[in-house]
Amino acid sequence: MKPSLFFLHRDARLVDLIRKGDEEALAILFEENRRPIYSYVIRNSGTVDDAEDMLQESLVILWERVRSGRFEYAAKLSTFIFATVKNLWSRRLAKRRREYPTELDPEVHSDGNPSALESIIDSENVELVRKALRKIGEQCRKLLTLYYWEELSMEEIAASLGFANAATAKAKKYQCKEALKKALQQLGS
Amino acid sequence: MPAQHNLHWTSDEDLLERYVLGQVDVSERSWLEAHLHECVQCQQAVRAEQELAAGIREAGREMLKARLKERIAVQPLRRINWYQVAAAAATIVILVTVGIHNRWFFSDEVKHEVFTEQEQKEAAAPADKIEAPQEDRAAQTQPHGAVGEPVPAIGGTATTSKSEGRRDIAEEKGREPIPVTTEKRFDAGDQEPQLAADARRKRETAAPDRSAFDEVETWVEGRMISLRPAEPAADKFVVPQVARGYERLQARKEDRKLSKPEALIQADGSTAGIILEQKEIGDLSPAQQQRQKGDAIQTLIQRKRGTLVMTLYLDRPVSDSVLQAASVESVGADSVVVQLGSQLIGYKLPPAWSEVFIRQAKVKR
Image 1: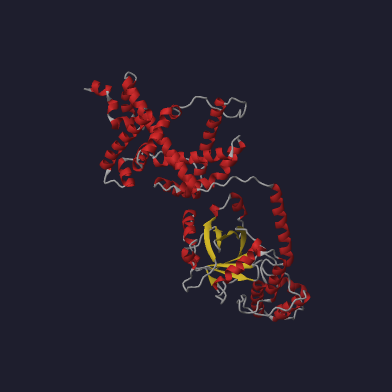
Image 2: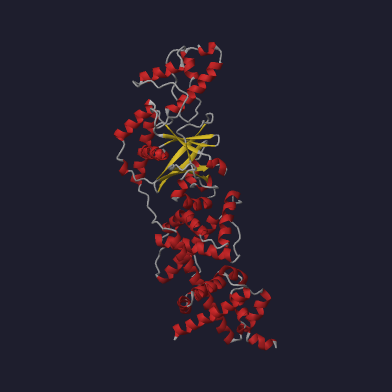
């Protein structure tokens, strides 16, 4: 069944806000989806903190998808958020089961193998990178985040951070990356 | 030298970044990966770049989450207290019963208006119709569900004039007769209609201490009134500032604007204590949307920094100009009428709120 145009229209406006980098859209979506998500997570062996974390996580994923141009309308935003939370929560429960094997939640199915991304994220070096990021300047942190996380083009980054052009932004990115590597070396030694 | 290039492709910073970010096309990826299997140095470089990207992404996510957390004041989820729900339901039943008993949904002012309409109709009708038997007459004088509440039939004889009829009713109830007038509003300076004064006295003696009233918002249900558009009256106060547009996003932004005290200053320099906003029905919760049947208009009344904000959830939002020209008018002691263009919407207010409302309405004076 096609989602109603009314909701699509409204969702389209929210997506447009996210595309422009307006985080207010996330706050609105958080409030609107809080009750069903909290209800779902708490009903499935979670806590209020888990629910909040899951909802934030799903909104972050939505943000990433939209900002990097990988989001496609397939359903209402609330449906997307709920489906994402269900997946995330299933994985979280499966992970907990691996760490603390019990008989809880037999309905959750998972192959039990962490994805390639998870295996990278779990590594200690990733944590080192996060620490090193705190040691470089605010502008560099923003620039590298826009490039690696939000996957913006150099033109978009230049416009966002007020650089003269894409070439300037690219040169700055190189300097920032060098600064980050240096901070990493210092932390490693 | 393709072979040399292949061995060291990871030294090309741009290519390495594009590969890790998944921005290379399929054919390019296949030859890059073919050499990755044989080149340990390249594998290490790719791994280092992946960790760098993963760390930055994680940091980006955390930063966004932190900012999101700042934006929303996360309230702990309240579990449903069924005792409270039962108590609230019982209170509603009592209020509705008392309300029906006292026939207060819409005040006598509106009934006067109905009388007046009926009077005009009957004045134009042939005399034999006016001289109808008592039972028929009682049926004729029933208002036609104008405000969603039935008004009882007029007593008295067939030849009794309207004013006499009302006087009879009042006397039956042991009240003073209501002056016959087509003026349905009253000024603060004027003498209040008797029933309004009665209601006020009743409130003053029975209502809880005002200071104990700390409710910040309530939902009320408005009813479309199919009377002719109200005429401007001396005590009508014009809502000075309203939310522009009806989208929730806009409304949120407007909330900030409206909360500024200067937004309450009228063009003539006086102040009014009630702000009118409109939102879409879609902004209501599903349960509330289901309640939005017929001509009912779900309305949220909130107290914000000493100001009352009425948010009407409309099926078809009105234009900015209509909203700006809207007015809120007190009718009787515990009801208000909102005029939106040619539409009149009536509200019966909960007891504690009616006091606040009337007080706010008088701010302008």
